[in-house]
Amino acid sequence: MDKKLHINLERVPKHVAIIMDGNGRWAKGRGMSRIFGHKNALTAVRESVKAASKIGVNAITLYAFSTENWKRPKLEVDALMSLLINSLKKELPDFMQNGVKVNSIGSTDQLPKNAQKVLNDVISETKNNTEIILTFALSYGAREEIVNAIKNISKKVVNKELTLEKIDENTINNHLYTFNLPEVDLMIRTSGEQRISNFLLWQMAYAELYFTDVLWPDFREAHFYDAIIDYQNRERRFGKTSEQITE
Ligand code: IPE
Ligand code: IPE
Ligand code: MG
Image (tube, rainbow, N blue to C red; front, side, top):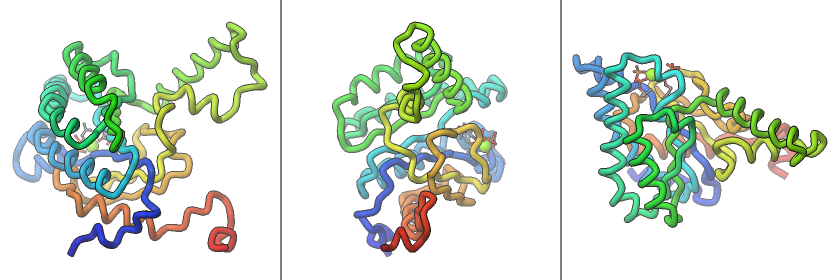
């Protein structure tokens, strides 16, 4: 049965963020090295972007590498970086064909130079695409992002470009890496872990959270639609009462 048919196209989340987790366990379960799991993660990325695009999601953000992931064994970090480079190169024609605009968040200046170059090239090649914005969170940490925002805002106050009284939530929004993205409506995490792991802390203030036991390399279009259907069955009250919402 086509799960997509059960989705209300009028109430699709604008921005879906995904913590792509479980590659290591997927590989271990097959008696293989963790890196084998990362190599098998690309299909899930493709399927998620395709599914999101089909139902009209405007933005999809994928947590690909955290500031904390630098602590992993060098062999694994190196493998992840070369996979990133190869996958971006390989996917570029599909991004162009499907109108995918690529974006990144995080301290991407920490990435190896060749990864930065490929990333910047893909971002610039796809900049006029309008179907969907695909953001890769790379060397991303929400606490670091907030620290950077505070520093940049403080600089403006010191330089008298901004007064204290003018600082509000929009000021913060505009100084985060995600300044050009809509609010996160839905956050999906695979692999059964139920935590945020320093992802989009500010941006997820009112996001609906969806956890699934499916390991990331097994995640497919139908799983993505399951998450959307679950999201659509929730009542987003934003502090109001249920009666106020249904009125
Ligand atoms: C997610 O899978 C990929 C990255 C964090 C880069 P993991 O590598 O965390 O896989 P598990 O959680 O160990 O199974
Ligand atoms: C979070 O996954 C980061 C990414 C998916 C890139 P981890 O597997 O690194 O998270 P923790 O450390 O188990 O919380
Ligand atoms: Mg993990």
